[in-house]
Length: 404
Image 1 (spheres, rainbow, N blue to C red):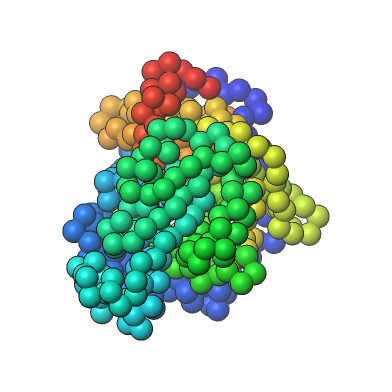
Image 2: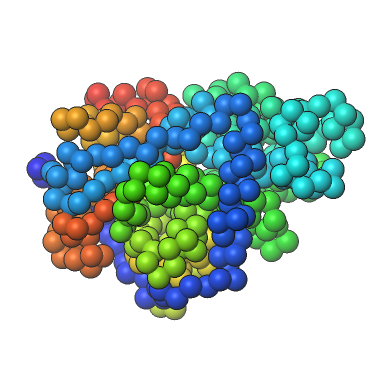
């Protein structure tokens, strides 16, 4: 194995972890609710169930029982998972404006002149590193509405252009992600626009919940495929966290489905935006906020303020939080893109690859750290590749040129 640099990750065990099942918090993510979400998403002609890839040769190399990667780079042709939240939240908002159950509506009806005449022109606004904004812009466009997208400073021009290509008015701000969220919230209120954000605050919780339910449909797909193939469920799931909405969605669905037999959930963050690591490290496990530029190649995870609902879920059900350097992500990209033997090749972006990079660091490095989370030779690991090469040149810099 390659030499693993010391200090590329740190972790903290969650002292507030509880295996107990909280039915009230997880009721929004029960199988019936999320199946309805997925059934609606499936109505779009571009829907496909993204691949759940097995990496047996890498698992053998790392001396664990199984590695599976859900590859969201194939989602709706948009190279990232985020659209699963945006398309459901925007459609659900339109359905509510019509006074209709979303289950009774098709995309064709929502796109119809009659619907547009009834509800008028709506502008949806969001803050994004790129993937979420592109998903919101795409969903607004296909549903006949407008979008305004603001991106934090440091966002790559190629991601800005990808958002604009979906018909949005889009700009890069001089603020970090969390400050950009506050700016867009103010613009939404001033202009009567609809905020579509996967984080929440007092008075703004409904749309974020719909987005998180949209993400949870990914977990439903995974479990459905595992059962169809008579495959054993994972023992460990490594979940990327920015504000934590994606991680909470997957954890909540798996927890409500398997209850006391649920996998071990492990949060993975950039060390420049590690609000869950900082929260779990605090004296009382209170929600902590990270400020500053949060400069990391993992742009989709460069968020300093947790979503309160996500924090409630993850602070109860996540076993640990890992704070990782950019080198962990870059290594993950190279491993997935250069597979062993017959393992499939997976094109993964910076935020998509960090869980696999961390898994490699753990198994190639400290036996003590593996023991702390029961990551032994019997472990069955699931990671989710949340994005592909959303910036092609950046991807080549990592994989070809060896950046980080």
